[in-house]
Length: 182
Image (cartoon, rainbow, N blue to C red; front, side):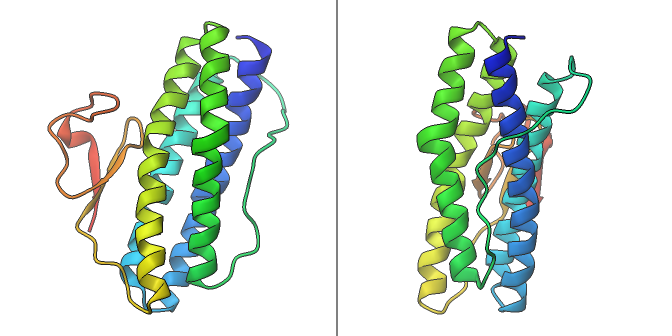
């Protein structure tokens, strides 16, 4: 694997891993504040980030040794308003800067597995940002967000609200590959 794409995979794995853990902590905070649906949202998206990290990690199976991951990570947890703002900032970075760049470099370097992994994550991050923005709007007005079941594809991490589709629109996985967060 070409070194630049390899480093991007390492960085993406680090960023998605940190997002996974951060969102679990944010979910606990939301639960303490009695925002049960915001907590469920954070936990569902934490799971999607876990799937993304796993996809990136599998593309790095050729590596043996220690490597440094340079990842954008939001630090400084607080109340649910602050945590949602941090989540939105992280998703915005992935949508506007990180994944578009990583996808183009992987494409240029002919690294099809890495490109697929980045594209799968990128498709989900846009939905994560929209869901977090909706949640922030509600929490800012002192209310919990109203959410249907949140579905996460176990293959690519695609996340949606409502009924799981017959096939994932991103990776083509069958409906039974979606995990519901009710």
